[in-house]
Length: 81
Image (cartoon, rainbow, N blue to C red; front, side, top):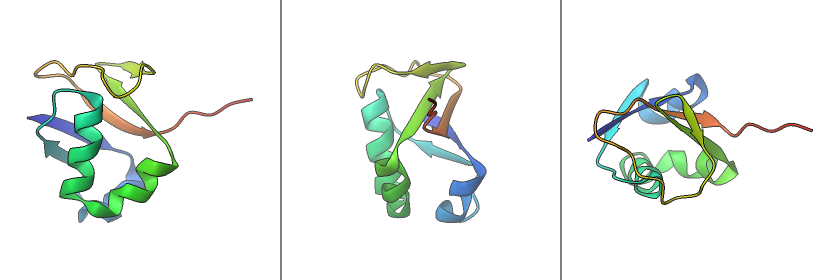
């Protein structure tokens, strides 16, 4: 089980929850399980999100493993120019 910390704009889509627990071993599992548990998260996830695991922003796609006990944050995708 992974506890996923959400940015404040998503909390209204999860009944006010700041942290959501899902069963996930990879970043792809995490996104799928978040949407399964809270279908309203589909649109923000489709718009683009970043996942940070233990302080490291993951940029390698949906196969990055999530070690047990990791600190996980779902964040708005970082964009710059």
